[in-house]
Length: 114
Length: 113
Image (cartoon, rainbow over all chains, first blue to last red; front, side, top):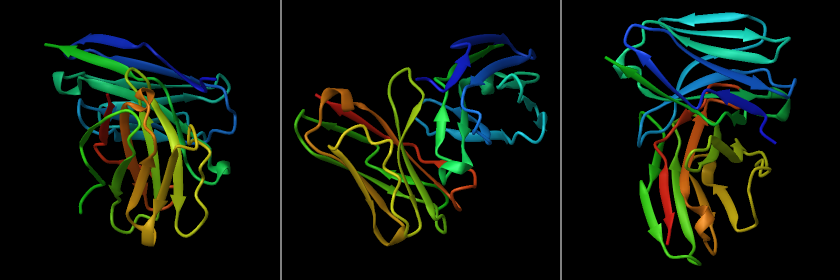
């Protein structure tokens, strides 16, 4: 059972455009939602994270929007740059499980073209 | 070290052999996680260590998989009698405690021939 569904699988965006990646979850116990960026041959790097007590969090060009009632959250990358080309993973964690072991989406491969 | 260190970075072995993968977490991080990343898939949780508590092994796919963490620091993931479906990138992450952001190493790419 896939507990975190991520879309789209791949995304091509023009330089300067907005990249939007969406995730939906099923487990209402999830209370921590990070986004990770992964370059080929490297491990995932934490980009930004949100907890369900806020509906939006912004760090630089990256924004997470969170809709608790719809059980959805999304990553917006403003003014996308070729250096943003990577695979992005959303994830969810449940503190009640004793740790934030993360359940990941299957990833979105983002290509930003000049 | 500055980040999570994993070794080897690549491992090729024959089906049926045992393999050991090593993870050296960030100094001072009490929580350590192992994940598996198969081609085209997201990361799959395997096992979690927190301090001296019993590990959470709920993600281990079979009894051929085991892990230990010595002295609350370095961890070793062992896969016995490897199968071709074990081919994947094995990632280790650590955090200050179980409720802090997880920092990942670059993984070990395991290929079973």
